[in-house]
Structure formats: structure tokens, C-alpha cells
Image (cartoon, rainbow, N blue to C red):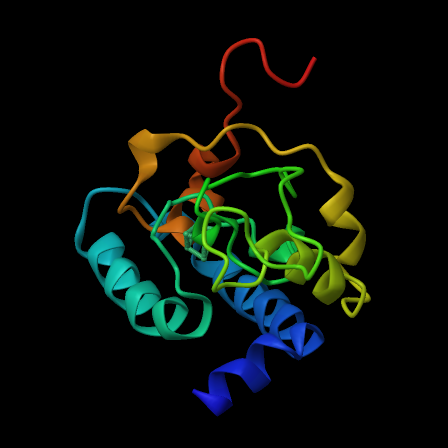
Amino acid sequence: MRVMSWIQNHPHVLEEAYSRARAALVPFRRWLRRGGTVERLFIAGEKLTKGPIFDCRMCGQCILHSTGMTCPMTCPKTMRNGPCGGVRPDGTCEVKPEMACVWLQAWERSKRMPAFGDEILRLQPPVDRRLEGSSAWINEFTGDGARMPPGWGA
Ligand code: SF4
């Protein structure tokens, strides 16, 4: 547990790991397709790694690098843009007072990310529930993860 919170509170290490992992996958991008063995392996790998580190909910559209390496899907309102306005004065969640506001953590951690920290200012589209349970890495390379819903992004 202590190791996990150390990792989460060193987002610059995580953003470096993300950049390196992405660069390492680029040469293999033509094999990164949905619906086959490769995707099943990625799904297993993501559950195994992002599950314990980020409490990943397998939304299939990972925006960790835009949210201070803090998973927005752990917000009880599953907000992709936050905070919601109901943050308590002590920084805890209005829905679950026993937890810190995910978006306050995201904001604080993003300030410690030299490469992607400014991405927290981006307006995120609604999550595409059809991608739930799929591999976010595969979706990143196929472009499925970045596809905008109709009418969004004008
Ligand atoms: S944003 Fe989605 S893929 Fe990324 S850690 Fe959160 S639930 Fe998992």
C-alpha cells in the first residue's frame, strides 16, 4: 500500500514510464488491433499493472497523462472533467467523505508533471462506454480511444 501511494505521488516517474512505454510500442503498432490474442494479452497486462497502481476501472480510454496520473474513473461521479463543485472544505469528496477528491489530487499531481502537466486544462469528451473492458493501449494506437462523439470538439 505504501509503495502504491509512493508511486502515485511521484507522477513525473509515471509520465516518464508512460512516454517510454508508448515509444516502445510504436514499432509494433500494426499488430495492435482489437479483438484478438494481442488485445487479450494487453487487457490482462493492464489489469495487472494499472489495477493496483491506479485502481484502473478499464474504461478503455486512458487519460491518466492528462489527469495527473490519477484515474478519473475512481471519482464516484466518474467525471472526466472536474472537480464537480461539491468538494468539501477539507478536500474530501461530497459523495464519499472518506476519500480525498480525485480531482484535487489530479490537479496537485499534474503540477509535478513537466511533460504532460498542462493537459489537465483540456476539456475531455464524455467517456465512450462501448470501450469499457477493452485495452486502452490498443485503443490509443487504433485511434478508437480518441474518437470524438458526434457534435463534440467543434
Ligand atoms: S482512465 Fe480508464 S484506462 Fe486509465 S486508469 Fe482510469 S479506468 Fe483505467
